[in-house]
Image 1 (cartoon, rainbow over the protein chains, first blue to last red):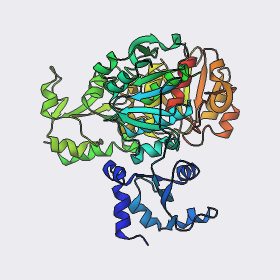
Image 2: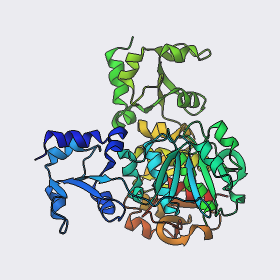
Image 3: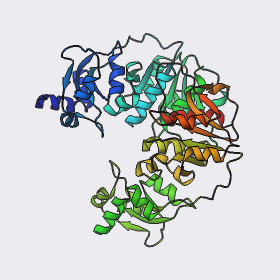
Length: 244
Length: 244
């Protein structure tokens, strides 16, 4: 049976501060849990699962799963509909990045919606981008809503929080490409083998100062009337044209 | 002051049944409200706004705005953070569609997440697609979460709920293109001037029977490791390549 301190601990992990202190994050549901369990760079701390889930697994390491009731799961879940199993995992370990040459890096300026952040991480993973540099005020990549919408890509894409303008200034050899409403037509862009693609905030776009540090501007041509595109959709569209 | 019956009425509009009975929907926040007020095919039923919002408007028709307090707004809102104004609007009126020739139509098979549905509607609007045919079990386009994420495109894109296989059978002259994981490379597709682009459910993709009725299959080439793309992102990527 779950004790009060365990419930409190897991519930605390919905907060960034607690996740950072403990170096862990939570994920929920059979699909993402199985995906994370299979990854070499993520260590499991503890699973909490109802008997239905446990009975479907093969042999698991003793102590790694705690059986709980559906009622207990409801007390732990961050989801609207609890889904069999919750896992507490150590944050993934990634090799240190020594340079940004000969690769495309994604940069996010104040992406605030956790769903967008997760969808962008998943999208980066689809297009083979393994590093995202985010402004410090962007959504935390270990926010439970982000983790759920990455669908497991959280283990393959390294997300770094940094000051964006100094970052670009430290890497002046790498051209930065800003996604904006008034730039070069995306269809006229050649494939980009080396660069930083900058995506802006959901309503304000890329900050004025940051934009000045971007060497190129890219625009997705509009055929209809919407004022803008969702940030994750825009990211996907641009990547689909420049990653070749 | 708001009376109890008004609170009850507005709260009831979070339910599809009530929206359908009344032929109305709700939208919230200055940006989307101003966008909807400017549209010729949407009639306002009633606005409820705090004094800060009202004082920023020019002359408005008498009776169209009811002043409420911030506390009253909190009782009415569907948002986590109430945003100055809530509007009840009659559902938009669209011209009857007489044929599907010489245009691209979007078809959604069981898109369930309201955020995805709204983002897809906005994306269709960006690419000049004015009609979306959805399976009857897709998210309702007048769900408040959908309305919010369309950012106003709800007034320009006609969303029809129908049985998808009979629909395709009735329009056999129009080729259907399925977005799948194993089809023609998107980069090898010519622009599509006439057709139906079919997007599948978030986790299950396009239903097996429906897929059999699609003449072509399109695949977004994967460069990395993610198992799939978010449905709205996939829609945006495909449209960006086939709408020319």
